[in-house]
Figure 1 (cartoon, helix red, strand yellow):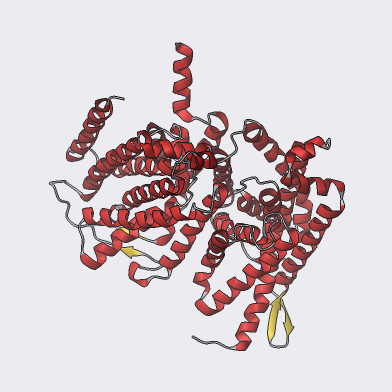
Figure 2 (figure 1 turned 60 degrees about the vertical axis):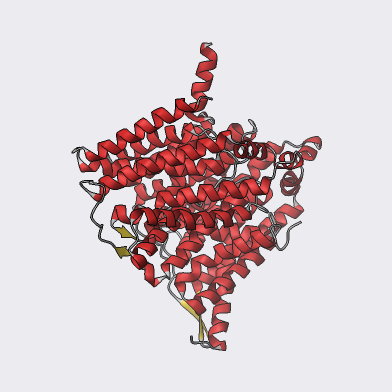
Length: 313
Length: 291
């Protein structure tokens, strides 16, 4: 595995995206591009736990909203800049990940997944009843002036999200090839066998869940600034869960490149459908594609590529 | 905070009736997930589908609960087809464990939900019947007839299912397939056909439960999300696959929700089922009546 084969193209691509944000292309491109890049961050983060370890986290909205609301709290209370907001989002969502990871001590399979759904609704109820962050009606925010010479705040957020997706993909790739990834794959196939062979299963699950949670939180942290608005119903929306699940499955689960491929394809398609048809249909597209891929191509696009390579040899 | 014995009693009474309703909507899941071990997260979506089917049929002037009963054969067939598909694509290939089976049902739930939004719009739909909107006066307390109807249906379906599972041959075979599929095969029964039948029954119960849901109050397509918590809470609390346990667990959830609503306000109600679910999963995953 040659590290330059990943790092050079990945950094060049990110640099290109950041430079693009300085050009005078239509603002809407960045508004939509932000969502696609955020999809890659969320999908890569989900894949660390769901793909490598086989623990299906339906609670993505809980982590995204934890990131968004942590960012809001540090912004409202301290007037913190974007970087601090993102770090706060990652920290609190990471702590949530730690807690959810400890749940996996006793819960496996569907029980773990249902428990993560429970986390969404419990946190949403807390936020609904929390005045400081706006309760059920939410809060209107004014975007501060962009820094680093960006023309608008949306452009800056796009560049920040590009850097974050580089980071998320790099972390998920590093984890895949490290001893953590090996251990997670072992426990995905058989937790008992892994434990018997000396794999510290609980520790690895907690580590994976914490890192995954922190990345999900970081991905959600810019949301209040991006929308200039925050409210519980959209922050805790289950469509985050289905997208973050569908992207790795479409791309190919358990490999770092899967969420990138799936995120780019599905994210762009979703933006296209939202603009040309309707936002309801956009969720329908995700659901239909998810079911189609799970049924017809369980190993996703990467699986196709693999079998195509094998047959052409 | 205002507190009185009177209010507490009213909350308990309301909770009891609400609990019967929660048991009714969870019985199908108790079969499909509890007995068959299928990660059926689309159960609440099928429940809402049942409510909308009732809404359509009730437009002709038929009583909504009768509509639910009339729809059970349709839902039975739907369940058989769905299980057959699940079996062919996942169970037979051995790829149902873990991620893919769950992703399939989660995706299915979204497709049903968005399909309903596209067909009916996102606003609430309700039905009319003589027992909706009026209530029985018991001293100072008012018991809405719709709650009584829901409670009655829950009791009847619970009795019917538990009799079926303990007295008839196929019913016992369904219980057996959940415990030991290999042994059932050795006895000369076909586990796939038995499971198909059981999943059909579970889905058929959803038609009736959906009718009860729309009798209790107006429905909207995204309601299935709340019922993920309620139905799974009831089934896990009951101990997987116990029908009478499901009724008791439903009553516990109903009373807990109604007491919390009285003490903290309605905005805390959704957290009750999910919180109880987490507590049960964490402390006693085998449930109250589990093996």
